[in-house]
Image 1 (cartoon, helix red, strand yellow):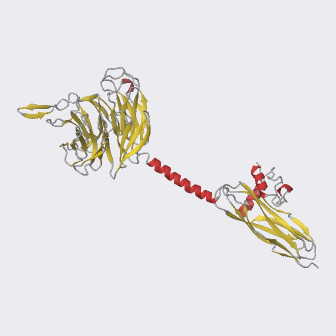
Image 2 (cartoon, rainbow, N blue to C red; image 1 turned 90 degrees about the vertical axis):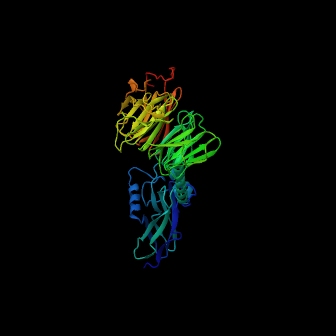
Image 3 (cartoon, rainbow, N blue to C red; image 1 turned 135 degrees about the vertical axis):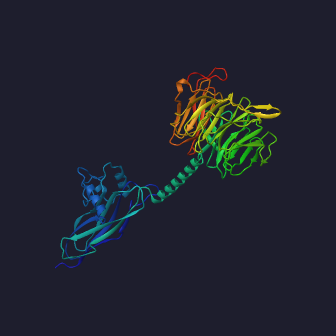
Length: 550
């Protein structure tokens, strides 16, 4: 008559995978073991059967699916069987580190969950060990996850009591990349992203570019933006190679200009109507303020450098004293002013002695002023008139052809004018100063196809008047080679596209060197770029342009 009992026990029901998690990187495949004991405290021999499964159904199904793959053997050399005993080379008496190394080098390793021996006969009073081996791939990322294993044992003689026949074991599976290192890497990566974001955010503007201005030698470029900053970019002859933020204010920067010839002064116009100037040699700052909240749209500095002209949204043109050595640190009253009655968008100096000023803006109004006074403003009457929603957005002239005027408006029109015979002149009749000439300005060329009929925001002429650059709401920067008369060359009637963006081009400038054109352009999203365009060297007399395109 059988008496007594059989007991199953495990002194260490919890382990980790891998058994000794590493500090920096765990193996991709790891093996770990448990040691159980089965003790026969009965008075007869007992046949003991044991098996092990994952408590989680999904884990068990994945194991079985992997073991059923045809024609494969595991990394330890055994045919796939979840409960087969381990071969001698995988016996737990061997160091687990060597087994783990072998698993990670094996090209066709198999997962394993096995107990050895799965069956055995115990004599009365005997205690035998059972070695449970688990082998699986570790996840790359995540935190340690607990898996539970179910060990079930049965006896050949069911009449004998089997104590603790069911054992639940805990397996903590660690990721390949330790969790602390993931956190550290994540925080470091986030800080790096923030640093890069900060770097690139401060590398350029974050708002619409309103103005671009090359220094005399083309080594520097000023950019003014709605993001309330003014930046100075270094140019190496072909592209931008560095930048420096000159001003950060609480108001949009509308325009920035160097003092001509010497470039030793810098003048900046703001959205609120203020003007600030800096003497770059003497390190002095000047403030010009007349009517707050009267937005500045343009600044013009004649070559003599005695006065500064500012154009405002109210329609006023103001003249300020900037004579070298005589500039007050603060001015609240201009030297002179004139109210033209329309919102000003752009201005350009005209005439051989820069004696006249072209002023353009709302209602498609284009007005010529005699800066020496004594004559009434003259409207260019043969420019198409417009309503309150139609603007001339930009005007430009050429230093060496001061009577050539380029005009661009928001209806997509570009035009070139010869103003030599229509500049208002001062005359004296019966002791009174009168002025004006009614001679229409000569229209040289005009076209509507340059930017697909969309607004042309900005234009610039080279000093010799042989190239016109334009930018518009279609996102293109166009180059227009001109002949000596100021017309588009016959072989370049449709212009040459330099760039094409998805954002409106809001500012351009151009500088000519003997063999290259440097074209600067700014976009609505704050991008500033410089593009170099090779041109043929010219041996033509001053004022003459090549008859062939570059």
